Image (cartoon, rainbow, N blue to C red; front, side, top):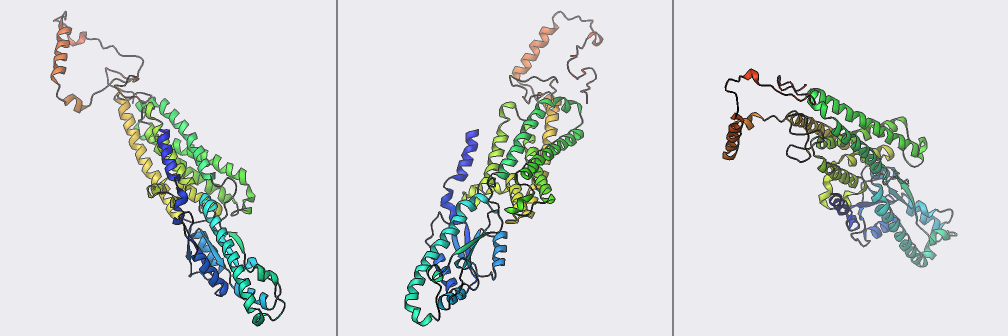
Length: 454
């Protein structure tokens, strides 16, 4: 089963570098002069390959701050030609004076949108494009200067502006590129979930007496309350661990860490662990021990993939993982930490919907578990009647349908032979009062009154 799950994991990672062209990054010309026109043309004319993001021109942005805001909320990154770049270079070449080549372009990135994709593909593409156009523009500038020098030069030109006319600075508008960022949410949620799995399996194996002695309504309230308390406790550890790792001075690389940040991470972790714990316990209650690992394997691995993979870089099949609790919780935490790519409404809605649906599924599972236990069909460990491992203290009671079911010829023959055998040596004067019912003192079932201890 682990290999089946791992095949899903490796399938999501297979040849993801060949799907990088599903990511779009933009070039924004705020200069409007010859630098903006030349750089935009050079970037858009770059040879496109499947292993590189696709460059597109963005023309509805009119300031650097607007470009930063757009990248933080919607984009992966952008190469921005700053306003006045052409005028500053022209002045440095004709009049002289101070000139800073890095004022020509700004690389705007958002590592908080998806740390791994940003580090592996978006940041290298931005830097490679900026470096390439800087070199090409420099060579073009020197060649043009040789012809235009007599007509242009009015003073001592700035040689630095001549030889290195443009460069860039980098701005991360939603920084999350610290050391543990790629695995922070995935590992944190996984540690919480695995801790919950062990507790829930223990609950399943030791709670049989509850199902034959406690009312259904009380069982539902008890299990949902226990799982909620467990999720709150484990996610509290997650939030404390994040606080201990980054500390209150987290604003050095991302948004300011406040008291609200602590509680947002705590309650997000609670929602993720609660949704998955409800889902897994629904399966654990009625699953034989031999199959109890199946729900965990097929739940944990897709959730891990959804945190560490980028669906733009995976086959279309894996888009269903947008609905996993790990993914939606990870997006909420990344927004809280970095402010990148806000999709809070969708993420919170998915988590709340999953908690509601899985709660309903757990209610049905509790009802089924109690019904099977009271009828002697399922034993304390989860084995069903007919299994060689089945051992239940509750006798088996047939349903009305089973009593009304027609008996086969073989069964009728067996019952007739049994009746004849028992009739041998029977006292014809015996009455019903002479029959003694031997009850078992080891269980909670009274055969004379039918009281099952409920």
